[in-house]
Length: 218
Image (cartoon, rainbow, N blue to C red; front, side, top):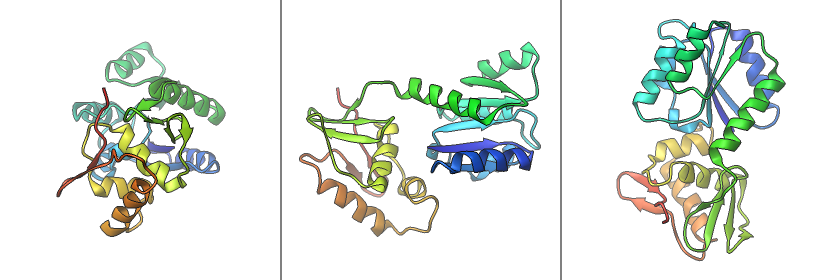
């Protein structure tokens, strides 16, 4: 799981980062909304955690801009603001939950898991007649039998399935799978070729000069 945090208190940032990365998750954080919008690759994240009162661009403005760009990634506000007007505005902008400070990290984790479980759903995503992919477990199935994939292969399929029907830029894929490491295009092509070698039917489409995508299956 990859989390994007907007919070101007570095102690809180480090606390959240340390807690979630102990379990193998990835947390990136920004201290102001302007820097987040200018630098974060938003499509890479599974959930947004935003404070409201942040410098330059606050959490409300930041999420508003993100939603206007059509990005529907679940969002939780974590804030000291507790009056009903702030809660109403938060939900009107498209947040999924609202947690008041001070908060317990274990509760935050439970709320994140609940949101992602609902968002991803219990059903597997059908890719072809014989293939399906479970976003919650990142497991690919062929005729209900699990396909043996490495963790990186699962993550690569995950980012494609999560954005099914959309052409994914190679830079976004590489950033997600290799955590921002400087990976060349050939490494990505080799990884996709390796996945295809494990498939009975190919569903990963190469869009020339644009990227990769998986089509929606009806």
